[in-house]
Image (cartoon, rainbow, N blue to C red):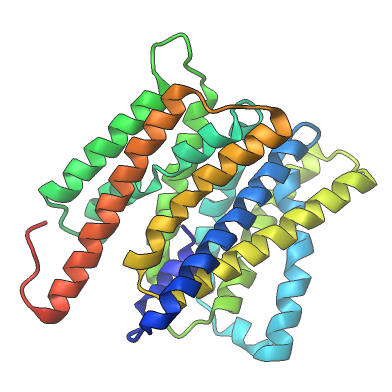
Length: 310
């Protein structure tokens, strides 16, 4: 659910022939992002989340800067909305820190499922922050998604893990991060946004990482480099998918992350998703798809006639 991809989803024309390629692009991109998360979970066994974020982003920045220099010129970085990027960078650091902290205690599939509650927070926060109207359809989807979260978290039950609240905190900060994209001018390019998406979280992570720094072994350097590559490829492919096809077509395939997370969790740690995680994830997916469908329907009606009741 990349903010970059959402910003570029407003392209006015799409070719129907591009839709299959867009779906492949987002599925592969999501797989790379889950691989990034899986590597991060491995690294949390030896390193603090702040150090992981700092080193990973430090490795990715030169590559992105080189691409900008060769394709557009570094002058485009000076035209960016720096205050907006700085604010979103702080939110991204907070969310990333909480997510990697949750991975120290939760299976990858469970943490991923809880993070996918972000659309619920987006719908709720859009009312006070963006003054948007949320009608009964979307409130119903929000309640449905909240029910899915409760199924996974099981508050008050023996299976409850406090680390699940960290994953939910990640979803909350990610929702704020996404809503903050409204402040980025449409004229700003993907590469510029990718540069600052890496730069500011790295800067916020630096002072925390300095206090918890642990020498990085050669093997871990390769893992961190793998995170930088996987994350950059994933974001680029997802952004391209939203450029090639409408959001209503490609956004539901974001949820293939749950499949990849379950598969990697089983292959690397031998974790099989609990029945509550599977059921709760299915409910959260249904909630998210309902929200996406209603938003797509509203956009279509606004172009062709009166919008449907929300």
